[in-house]
Image (cartoon, rainbow, N blue to C red):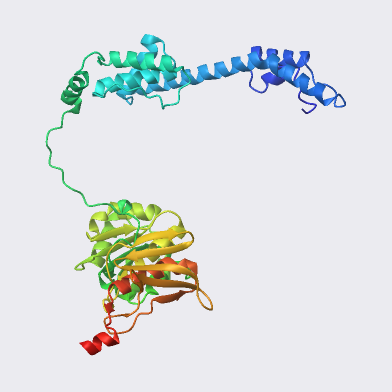
Length: 431
């Protein structure tokens, strides 16, 4: 304790939030059992501490009881306010009924509400002993039984559960509403899922990317437009950039236009419609965030309905990862790529993926530098496969860094999945 704090002074405890009665009792315990000098025997000082704790036990119990009482009062007041404002449920009403009609505490009122609600909706009688509760088990069961009876349950009736279930099904608020014709709306871009490798690859000529000006950076590692155009064949895709003047095509982008958009919704809708007219797409990615995403949500009806519609989200690092996942699904159409869902897994420290009969796994360091990825089938190493033009495929691939493992494994699996098995020399002679 510092010199400024005197535990024997009630004012010191009142300044720390204690009530006058509690502060006086704590200070009296410190005056009766003060600290012994530091040169006193250790056993005597420990005995003095235990005596002071024993003297304050009644005060601590009273403080705990008062805190529990205030917490219960706050819970009941909140529940009552919810009911008054029309936001409470049937169970909230049952909690207040158990408190007001049977003077139950908060925990027991909740057990009462459990029993009442079970009877009200037609459930069988069942004690919820797994729910934490400070009350004794017998009191919990009694409160549940009381609520079950008040809710219309009768444990002596063999057909009680069936009767209550039928009544609950016929209750007016449970009956189906009048049939209405619901028109399915076009999904807004903010509801699009994040990109994944579950979807089959799409030709670059049938892909649409909408990127914001805030994702165009002088650093090529964070420039979404540069990352996209670095992929072979990506120049055939439709890339639209949301700039200060609205939506423009990537090839017509100027440095003066790269800023926060200030165009209104009508002009933005007209610009986007002009850029997308007479085009069909299989794959759409919206790389917009914040106010840009709100803008395209407003004019989302302009976007085409495609087989796959996704958007980037969360942190900037995750957005770049989502973009790379989307870019990995693009191909020019000259190379064959297998479709289907890649099943990913991790055994200890090795990442692996499976597609069809092929499994590509990271097996450790590659000879020299990098990491080795090996493609296998059920019969062993995937040897004897070639692309459509007859180029043999190597079942062992070296990857420069672990950050490129997932993308390399996905690309390798789709390449092998679309490959042709070459006949062995003996098979060719026999043929």
